[in-house]
Length: 59
Image 1: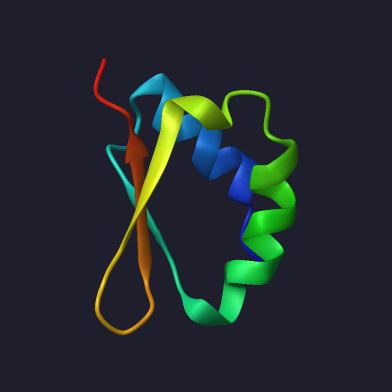
Image 2: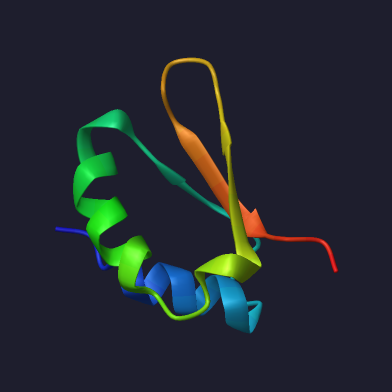
């Protein structure tokens, strides 16, 4: 099981510049993302094959 909250925190802290969510774990990720307090700073881009790449929004 992936730690989605840690990935979101790492993204905000600049430890990573993006991460991918697959269709198989999208529902689980959405439950975490929906309650994440800084979700407005993060945006996802859909890719071919159903994967979504999340990154920090440009400021």
